[in-house]
Image (cartoon, rainbow, N blue to C red):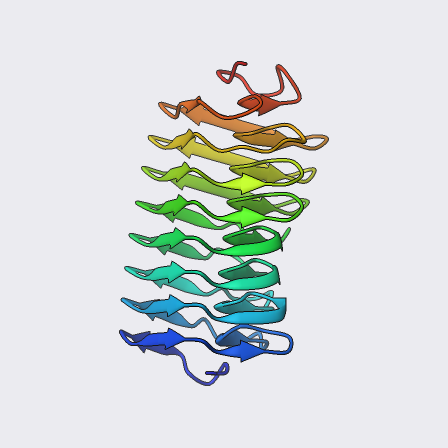
Length: 220
């Protein structure tokens, strides 16, 4: 594992790391903002949070570019558990990751995470948020990204918004995700603001968005 002192990762493969409480790369201090470029994370596990990457630094965030996350597992945030503010994930793929909540990503109330040109596909959660779990108060964005084929056993196959949080999606697709509890595409808790711009939420089961009528432009 690499700790907070490793500020920049350029390339490399992280495979089969097993941690009692945190991922293959972790940060706990408030003075670091690790940058992950062109790296691959495969089958890393954490008994706690963040199978591949764990960040519990409220003052900073982990930024990811051009990276691949496959088959990582954790109690929360199969690939990434993020508490830092203002992180950016670009041109990266999350596939086949799993967790109790947030199959691919678990984002805290502090996160304000931005995703651009990201693919989140075929991830799963034993509870809520097959693709993304957006915790209370989080403000996150999706731009030209795709969430598809993700599954949650509870709510929010694609995205689970807990409460008092917001999501802005532009030029993105949230398609063919499923959650038997409802909100196959997006599930919203109380006081959620979701803005969809040229971002279809279609073909999700048993419905696209829940509660019904909670998101303008999302029907069925």
